Image 1 (cartoon, rainbow, N blue to C red):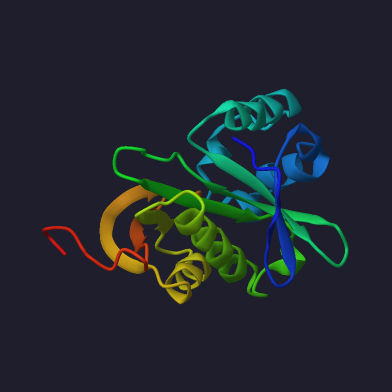
Image 2 (tube, rainbow, N blue to C red):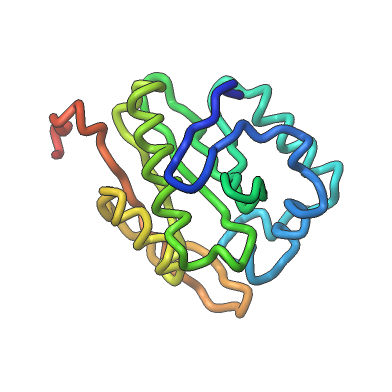
Length: 187
């Protein structure tokens, strides 16, 4: 699904990602072993046709939004962030992201865009909860989610395989809509 208005952050605009963003830069990120080491897409074909098909599938979906992270100062596309699939019954969705441009790593991009997209998801989509999952060895991602008010809700031991052949845990994270400060029966 797309939204016509960008979601602004302090340094970035989150812009609905369409096929015009699915060029060599985006394809290069997905093929780069340093960028894709924590992405499940590393197991899939990364050719241009497959990438355009994925982007179009998300655009046509009524349950997911995919945004380009665009640096406001330079206009550069530096990564992507997605919210979805949205579960309309439970009013929940997951966030996932990639910062493709290495020079932006460690500069607070993830924290800034996770915070903005979470606020948008709660305010505009009326979500009750937003979740995420991260390889345990991806400490930067986990830190960004925790900084944005997500809590660690669980750990899936030895859930995924790293490129080295070693297994890694997956950290499960979640954040409740602050406007709905009431937890469930277990909370």
